Image 1 (cartoon, rainbow, N blue to C red):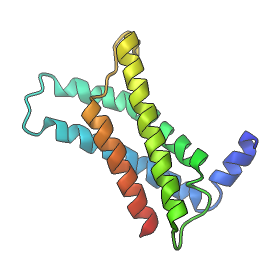
Image 2: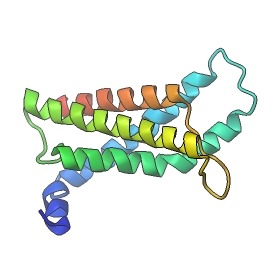
Image 3: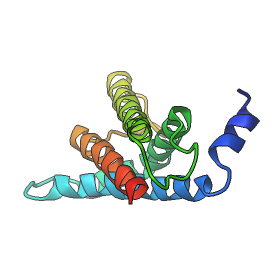
Amino acid sequence: MSIGALKAHAFGGGQTVASVVDMFIVVVSYSFGLGLLFLGTSVINPSELWVDLLIALPLIAGIHLLANVLAGAYGHVWGHASTNEAMRVVVANACALLSIAGLNLLLRQTGVGVDGDLVIIPWSVIAVGGLLSMLLMGIVRFR
């Protein structure tokens, strides 16, 4: 399938709205995960973690969006979702979560960062953000 055909298949009609909603869900979910990290802890420099998350969020949202497209989660707008459609959301978000965790591990191991600064997202933020994204995307689709 060509990129043009993939784009037309994935983002025709109401699917564009669904993808924008999904990107909003990802931003809120990962931000919530970072906010939870600060509850009851004394993080030395929380603003640095927020900056790192803001730098990483476009990539994180893009990974989730690509995973949803590849898993067929935007094939059509759900009126009555089936278990197959629910599994597409689960598979897409699981793949996105594993990809983001792998990328985070790679950055930690290699020390490569943005403008010489290492951008590291805490593991708990990745776990909470990924799982909350999966839950909220499922809720939105199953209305």
